[in-house]
Image (cartoon, rainbow, N blue to C red):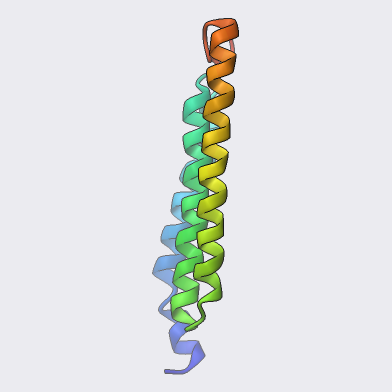
Length: 102
């Protein structure tokens, strides 16, 4: 299979990864109040990127994209753990975790 044929079969996976990442970006724009939802939207953007990296890696028969996706997942897990630890400390001091107090 030549590279042009393999890259044209990548379009549905590229579009799905882009859709997942855009849903995360849209969630960040719409959400103005809850910090946990913002963290989940950031995670969704990471998952869209990972889906695209793995699809390109499989299409091009190269494992580097899959390794990089594994590092991005590790970064996302560390970001979530740090964010939850900071939110726990913030909640203990202020009593809420809302982005804007209304």
